[in-house]
Image: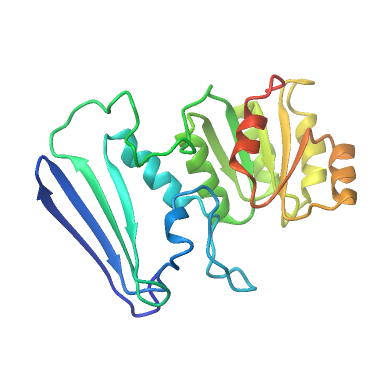
Length: 235
């Protein structure tokens, strides 16, 4: 990300039978150690203590998945920290169906379409909730998002989710109380309750189980573990 007053340049040019889209900035750059891994899920550089410069580490994985779905590829370049970054996207110049086999740049850890679930995400961190929602939609799920518990209860009655992904530290009620209330709305044993929180001590897991959660995942969650939970038989 460029600093305040920084610059982002976007250009589009033909290249053989493809279109090259280049996005370049003069921001923080990418270290040589991180560069080969930037498209991996939840992979991030070291963040400041207040997390103000960090996201979930999902965005570039989404970019790669969407580009691959259109038969293209994406690559990252940087001369190192403080020297900015460049991302090159190659897309077919003519509209055609995406190839059956993913491009070589889309490695096996790219998200794959899965059995659709109805998922309600509740998290007062709007950026985190919306980014996770985008990821789950790429995986093929139907997603709704709430930023507080009371609104989540209203939404659940109409949406009837298969899976609830709840943050614990909500502004109006904690995730434990919300899970109990939501459990009174959905039919017994019809939905999966997943706590997704920064609290991961054994005491926190005990509280989750007592509140009716089926799984307790700690941020940043491992993608393979999240997908395993979403595809469990209970859901």
